[in-house]
Amino acid sequence: MLPAASGALFFSIVVIAPGKILAGALLIVLSGAVVYSGMQVVAAQRYLSVKPPLLGSAEPISILKPLSGLDPGLESNLRTFFAQDYPAFEILFAVRNETDPATQVVSRLQREHPRVPSRLLFTGEPQYPNAKVFSLERMLSVASHDLVVMSDSDIRVTPDMLQTVADEFQDSRLGVATCPYRAVSGPSIWSRLEATGMNTDFWGGALVARMLEGMHFAVGPTIAARRAVLNGIGGFARLKDYLAEDFVMGKFAAEAGHGVILSSYVIEHHIGSATFAENVAHRLRWARSTRRSRPAGYIGQLFTMPLPLALLVYAVSPGWWPILPLVLVARGAAAYSISQRVLRGKLNWFLLPIEDVMGFCFWLAGFFGSTISWRGRHYRLYGDGRFELISSTAQHN
Image (cartoon, rainbow, N blue to C red; front, side):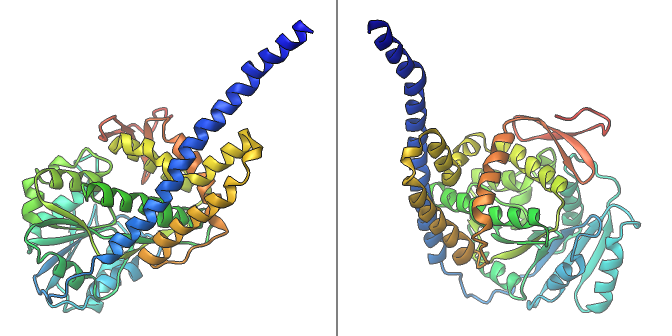
């Protein structure tokens, strides 16, 4: 009997105990994730409680639009900027050369809106690793106004966007403002899944960071800033080696003592209809870039994933299945608060759990590899968020 009892004890220590320890550790992390979901709800309400100023500013604004090729819906996107209900603004566009098909779109819109001051620049091949930053620098050098709005080609806005931004910049302490965006997908399932993640996880994390730490970052598709602030942080030349130039722009501005805010104006970010391969490449680029821009924050993203954590707990210890409905309620409340209340978008409840699991997988994948693909070029990432162009024939991991 003694050998049998010893064998049972050994089995319980070697096999059962580690399983319970793992399940307990996962449950602790899951508890934090559920609390974090509650924090997202609170952070959403904090953001919504800030009412935009109604000052009626008429400060002139320069819109900077870097372009490269024909993005889906490009003409419709750009037309919304020509249609701004604002008394004084100009639009500057930049492409590398005359052969870029975006030039034809710009020319049509210029003829359609002759009263809107606009100009198309040919930049040549970018001299910086970050081609977008090179284009922005060229446009800023000829921009007429101090207040600039830098906006990507896949953005669509309503006629009151410039007025809202101008009113916010009546605060003399403000240096940089980021416009939150509502991701609008194309018809592909991969695009719809990615939009679901953007409209829930990504902005949930950004709003919690805003609530806990204040705005010490900016987010890419549309950013407004003072020219003096951009020059004061070293200009675009200081941002040229960073993949996430938007993030460090806000970071450098905050460190220099300038105000950084999350604007009250929500833009539309039309992400197109990517194939599976394109979607994977984009998500890996995003994950690897984020890990290097915010290493601690990237690890902390684990707490934004309650459903995958709950599924892991259930897999290790099926007896704890009652946590699943609790987690679904917490996750649903957070997703609803961000996607539908803050971003005023539609939430696909069926795709949400699928995207949660996919997002967890891409988060894990972000810990591996040091290269990315971006607009047909390949780059190597470094630990401080900088990157450099590498040969297209190089081996990529």
